[in-house]
Image (cartoon, rainbow, N blue to C red; front, side, top):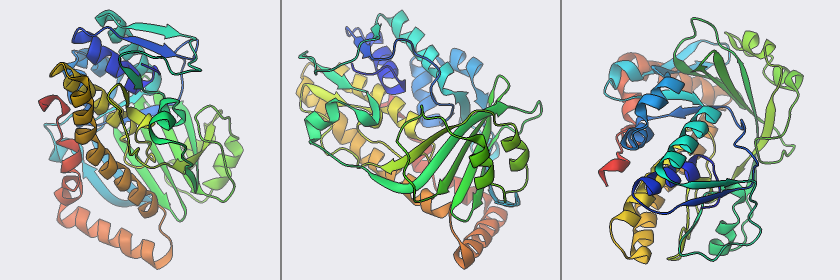
Length: 363
């Protein structure tokens, strides 16, 4: 396995628990704090529970009771009341670093070897090689040839600030012309902020580039509600360009396979990047465990995963447009959302039943 992110560590845990010998190669010398907040929806929580990790995951995460859509002034547009309308489901908010630590511990406990500080410069010749090495995967070009992603014209900032003691357990989305901001509490006194703006200048893809908090505040200076107070607290911020990648045409060749962002990078507008990685990991392990023919197992894995991931990526692309509407189109869309939220409050959340009702562990 190449890569000790969420996809690689979940796969290592799922495979090792089934008795497979697993070695994970990770170029970083330590699994340091990279990224920030994640929204983990019930389709991935089912995997976490099947791995026996729910009690530990619950302890490091916070509940998400609803999603609030607001305009740039902070006025309500629509509410997806998760706690009321989907009480059987568990939606959680967590810092990525805490989830990675949990998965690393679980993978090691199950018997997986994790070798840090091991950069893969040439693809190893092994019976099964899994590429869980993200958007800059070394394995993906070997299976799909050279590909060039395109810049979407959107740049994102990510920051952490202290959470209020009475923080609303909700993901709040503030939508303005050509930009939007998402924030939610992560538990353990932290609040996550992701802010996206349309701009022509290009930024590198990745989470490790430092940005200027003053630039972030200027980009959202016209936003109201709690946003100005949140942004005043930002002391450090990461910045990266949003690029659109195709879902890989070839995920496997019978002895090598891609999972997570290596197979299907997505824009962060459905909160499903980490969730898809967790789903991939479980289903790959289940397919490999179902019979001795590895080629058949990997072909089945791609057949099961590719259509669903394609649909999620397309939904995220659509949200990228819907969050940034301008002028009369924006006014009409927001009025429609307000009406639906008031008159048929379950309709908005049930549009995503196909996403949240999916149970990877039922395979």
